[in-house]
Image (cartoon, helix red, strand yellow):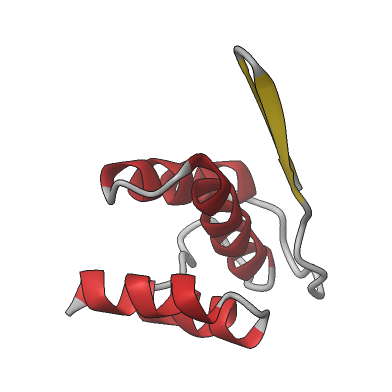
Length: 94
């Protein structure tokens, strides 16, 4: 999971429960997801969820270069109760 602490508050986004295969690159995956969400203009809570999803998908794969695609992240989010965020991601990638 992830915590964001900022002036006036804090947010927590729990980790997704997945089967971990390899944690190599998980931090880079999280950072990439967070930065992408910020560039897409998402709110902080959505950015944390997206970053956690990218990292969750990454740790389910072996190797540092096994990053998920935007459509894979959108599908994962849809399956985990974030259908609106999933739709927004798909519209960005269209």
